[in-house]
Image (cartoon, rainbow, N blue to C red):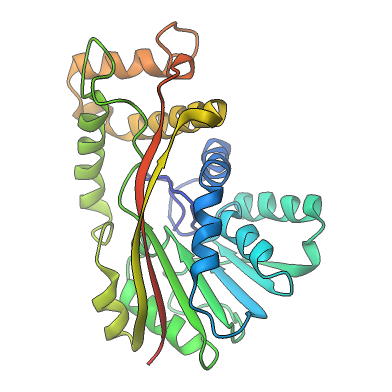
Length: 290
């Protein structure tokens, strides 16, 4: 569920299953995603239709902990089981937990959620899956497993991004206007081949797995560059990652223009721009066992 491909959360996200090698660069992008989208993540956790405060939470595909720490902040009496396939990401999460003084409230579990048998995650009151479900090869099976694991009246929250965040104005850069949209279009075509559930409507699949969808909402994210340093580094990391897998799908002119943006020593570097924003959408499904 964690993005070793071109798609990088948000939030969040989130994350935890893939069959490619993790890199420290990916972890840094996840950390930046958590920092830049922190207010939006907090608003989602605050709006969950919970009947009582959860005592045990599972964060499926936790990545480096964006959701884990947002949930710990929102529910100060809760404990979180953080699940991810990446040992590096889990170690990073554990280090953060120690720094924050909440290591006693966090248990990390390394697991591939595409395996037939999941580790024992207990009977959680809340299961959170942010930007992770679409990475699963067999999401229907995973949804049934989540359904069976939830405590009575427990809540399952699925958060998915509409796609890669956008950062540049439509007329940028001056020599290749619309470059970012063409880059994303190439990335979307590649990901459609590898992740058919990306961008899916999870409502029918959740219903088929035995859940009742209590709330579904789409949240527009449009963050101005007031946190320009973090947004600049976030944009650089996301676009570098996209370039690494779609370079052969771009025209020579677009590839050259993209490389100028990604050259941190260049006066045209994306880090030197003062017109960056973060634009994306998150859809949230809040569900219970039917």
